[in-house]
Image (cartoon, rainbow, N blue to C red):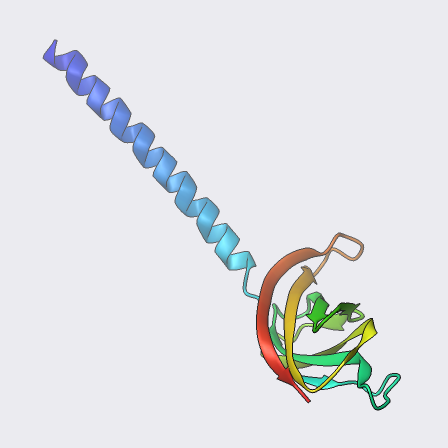
Length: 146
């Protein structure tokens, strides 16, 4: 009876250890792939359709970091009484922080004040020339716009 009990404990310990190792390897792989970040640095009124009411474009500048030689795209939403959207063309990631500006166009006018910005950084890893982009990082916040 004691031998069977000890065998059960050993099997249970091996199963728990295997599950923990699998989880650690999975988390390590996911972490290694997500060396990307995005943060809002500023927002400004664009020059598109400017008049006394404001502008139909908010230009948002981000600090972006993504793995060198990957391709990146930023999708942005800017809201201030209405919502505008925009995105970048592909840009080459440098592996270091880089500044990227995106225009969010709307049928409403943006004016000086506060604007809510949400953005997603999508990347296409090196070597997947026609593969899909995947979301690597996101950010959101209320920033002043002038």
